[in-house]
Amino acid sequence: MAEIKFEEALKKLEKIVEDLEKGELTLDEALKKYQEGIELSRACSSRLESTRKKIEVLSKNRKGDFDLKPFEDGKDE
Amino acid sequence: MKNIPEDEEDFFTGRPEKGRKIFTVSEINRRIKELMEEGFPEVWVEGEVSGATRIATGTVFFNLKDASGLLKCVIFPQTARGIKFELKDGDKLICRGGVSVYERDGRYQLYVRSLEPKGLGSLQLALEQLKKKLEKEGLFASEHKRKIPYLPSRIGVVTSASGAAFKDILKVAAGRFSGVHVILYPVKVQGEGAAGEIASAVREFNAYNARARKNERIEVLIVGRGGGSIEDLWAFNEEPVARAVYDSEIPVISAVGHERDWTLCDLAADLRAPTPSAAAELVVPDKEDLRQKLSRLTASLQAGLKDFTRSSREDLDALAHRMQMSAAHYFEIGASRMDSAAKKLRLLNPKTMLEQFRRRVSELSGRASTAWTHLLQIKNEVLRSAAANLNGLSPLKVLSRGYSITFSAAGGVVRSARDVSAGENIRIKLHDGEITGQVTEVRGNGGD
Image (cartoon, rainbow over all chains, first blue to last red; front, side, top):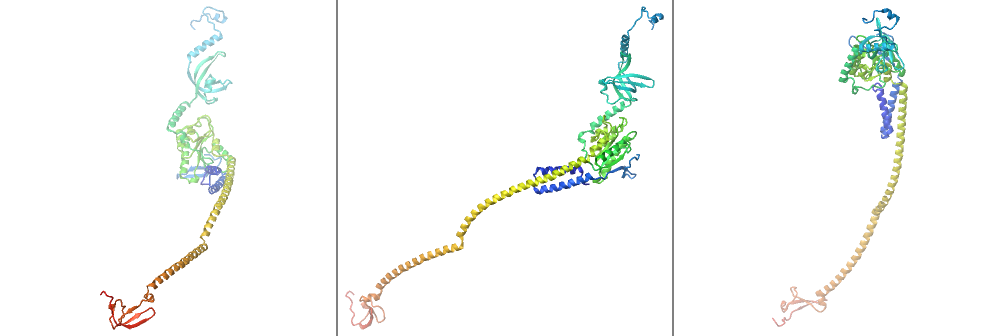
């Protein structure tokens, strides 16, 4: 899922369903598409069910590199 | 004053005297009104608002005050409708209008034709000029607007860490979707230096992305702050912010909490949300909606394949049927062809051929022997007649008819009388033997 964005995956899945419904594929192609569709559906689903909430603060350190630190609620600027 | 008569007593007794002009209230009010309208047809007045009320007809009444005075003001509905902000106590305004008298109450007031918040006039003017300039440069062009990603894996936020905007964004995001990843770049959102900080934060996010691995990139930025007065939002109207937003590779949602006026940041952004919460709603879709959509799609996928295999099966059945039919057809054709081939083959069978040959040979040999016999007969005939002829020609045969052959002593055939001489021994061959003798006389036949 890191490689493919949720939106793209969902779009691909939609396209596959359309293709399948059109029924212009060969059986081989259809099975391949179906396989791909199922994988996309799983990937989307796992992205959906992911609960890794993360809130970070981006800043630049003295060396000019970027630092990502966890955000602490209530902390002043 | 000079032409008022000296006799004051008369004034107080109220008796009419020569030279006095007495007005009715309406008359004097009308006179004052005329003077006022003549004297102040159009003036600019600045002051602080107090006691603003809007009556049902849409007319707005308020007072303009300063440290030591008060001026009653009225705005008729037609003008009031064009004013984009609410009048609040303490607002500093510059009003343009004419002074006149409301005769019924004997009250003079400023009839406001237009107004602007004080202190913003010049800023507003500058803003309008800047807006035109940036528009001309294409900073707000719709062709430049990028698509806002749906459920981005990382959302960058440029706002104050302590402000309501960031809290709202987190609240909305968490409510819709648990696994969200938000990265804040804290900035000052108002006051001195705010614009510079906002612009630089937008650029820093882009710089971060340029260095980050592909799957760690920030996919969308929310730039904004919670609601406030137009002055509070002013940083978002500054050129560096508009330019940074325009230059951003990362799609930007501007969320400056001010529904009425679009800031330059709003105009330059790829999408404008009226509030930070609304911005969060735009990028973080509701998980339940997505889940439903996904399960719908997955069901369609399965149904699609089922349909596909069903129709494939039907196709296959049809094909199989056709195959059978055509196979049967071919069998028929094949069978008949085979029949004829078999017939041909039977004819070509070596045994049959041998028989035929044999038959032919025997036939031929029969014919040959017949012919041979026939030939032999003919030959025999020929032979016999030839033999007969030969017999006739044989000297022995001639001898049998009484002829004889005389041989000389030398052995040669005596053909002429001269071939022999008297005294010579001769042999006479007869058909059945020989006679030996001696020539006694030789006589020729006359002639020679």
